[in-house]
Image (cartoon, rainbow, N blue to C red; front, side, top):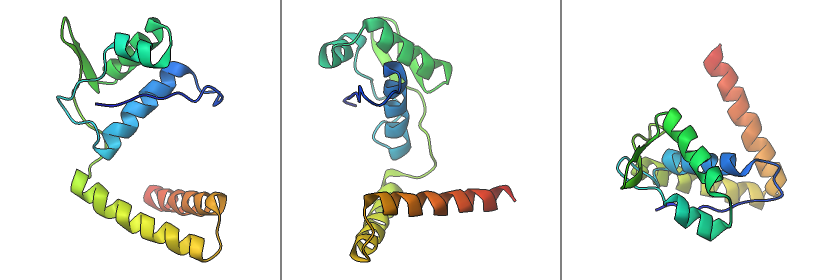
Length: 130
């Protein structure tokens, strides 16, 4: 089950942080169809937020077709995001970790690595459009 966390200084609304975390977990395969999200009460207790905030996030995810509410049962994942399997994610993550180690070995700090990664993914996205 997913454990939500908040970055109160991020400037991103609380409900969107919850939505983004669910989508992230779906992309990485940490949540799969049939998995149950924490109840609104559980999220409220763990994060000390308004129940309406959790319900708004879950409604947004439901609107996007990612989850479904089942009266009396909870909220469940309907579909995942991304096309890679968990095994593929693991393999790709290992390769990326190796690349990051090489970049750090070459003297790049975290911001340099992030900038280089962003530049490459942006360039590849432009190639995909062309």
